Image 1 (tube, protein in one colour):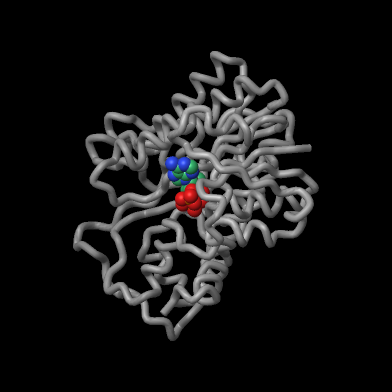
Image 2 (cartoon, rainbow, N blue to C red):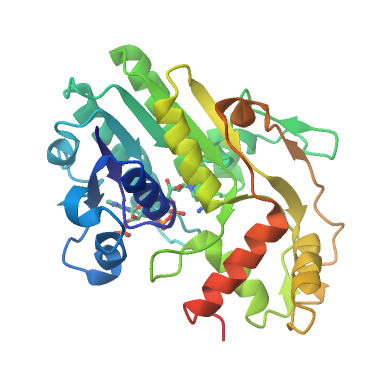
Length: 318
Ligand code: NDP
């Protein structure tokens, strides 16, 4: 079978491509720059790449750009989307590539009859950013939707970009009769295959690289290999449908620092919180649907260990 992975050089997508090749798929992978070894070399070195990996140039903001890479595919994994927070132009930097890019990819799918299913990489941030309280007894699940107006009010542009993109995707696929499944992961950590630093791995690097304080945030976490697997399960299981939250555990950064200290007692870690407000509350995220899909979750402590080891091995950790 032939499948397409958009944004193949990214953190999650690199693991997805690796696992797809191991499972015998032929992978047509879109990258923005086919001539940049930092974006392609780690993919070309994967087992099976010589025989079954095809890199194709495509950009989210170019109309029709994905026609060639999607042509002839049985499935499409749409992972490409910018993930960072700092921007002076959220519309151009985050919202347009996420929203217009997703529509661009889906329009190519709509005109390619071989495509049997699309798996969309959404995010947990498309579920909870709606002003509803999140407290220890609250369980966020797939019925939750973020509110674009609320995202704008709190100026969380990445959250807004993912919410608008997923919402527009569902509207489009329903109208066109395309079979789509969405994966909604929390903050993804674990080993890096790519040589560059991505945003979610940087959250851990910041903690171990001499930060004096940790953020007063509570964040959900999940291992990158489990997220990649969830995408494949969502494609291969005919009964998969709708959205799947993929979140192993939710911790406040103070707790994350504590676990890092247990793992690495001699490591210098931030000792105090960035502000003196009460700690942001924890909450739960339902694992029910993810488990029903067959997703197995690596414990957070193990994922943290893999992340630190990988950051060290790749010389990010000074
Ligand atoms: P990366 O930053 O590693 O990957 C993002 C990918 O998107 C890159 O391949 C990048 O290409 C591509 N991309 C960005 N802008 C464009 C564009 N204009 N045209 C074509 N490609 C573009 O991030 P992740 O692997 O972390 O994220 C992958 C997906 O997972 C995203 O949809 C993200 O929202 C989602 N996600 C990530 C989470 C996380 O914690 N990491 C959590 C939940 C969801 P290039 O390499 O050329 O820049």
